[in-house]
Length: 68
View 1 (cartoon, helix red, strand yellow):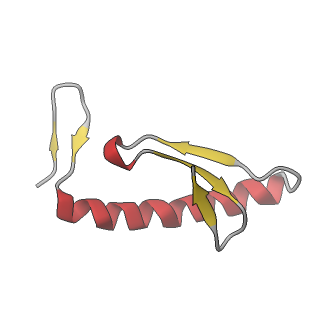
View 2: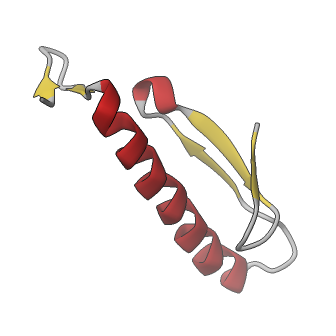
């Protein structure tokens, strides 16, 4: 069950984490499509901080991204 601690952070159990991470990756790709359409010269660097799923995503294309 998800819960919210005293700092306002959302605590997510392990089984839900994989589902959320899948949605997160899909959202990153959609966000890349929007940003890339506006600025074709520079692939965007998108930073995500979601607890243990934090990551910096360098998008090469709609189909691929590198977690750096």
